[in-house]
Image (cartoon, rainbow over the protein chains, first blue to last red):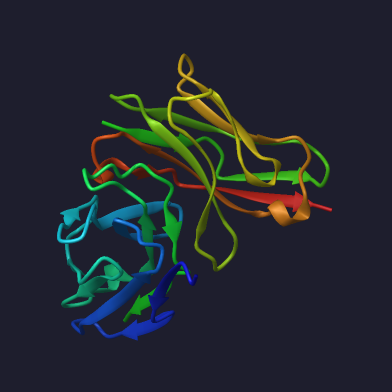
Length: 117
Length: 114
């Protein structure tokens, strides 16, 4: 099992460019999450998907969109990148339940380090 | 509203001495509480979690934490530090109702002196 994989590992964008961060999990988990990590601020939830076919906003959704492509894959899109989006992005998944219980242990990917100039 | 406060941004201990990483929380509901560890340039890994069962929770690598409702604390301890424990540690609070209420603390960096 690969667990949670993320691509790319590193990315540099210019202001205004767009890109999609990819995330996949092979643990048959229901719930998936996107976080950003900034120095001294812990992780902040951007979007999550409690189950296939649903997505919801987290704490800091502005400037981002997500797609739960299928049960395995959950992508994060930056339509017009800004320097404030320079961060390390983590994808995570958890078993969850079809009813949307999202307090299970989360399994994290290795992260994508994004720089916007 | 939920919140979590990690009281120390950096803790330094000598190898073989006890570790104490402090976490206080506030929650309107009966919370679930977690400790995660992040080694440099890695993702996060669960150390332990509390979900209203036993108040003393044992985790991996000899870590444990005690849920104290009266003090709204969930401090992480280990009797004897090892060099491999050097990492960033995050306390996390969540209620049962929504993933949007998962809140991470700002982290405590643990350094181990030889």
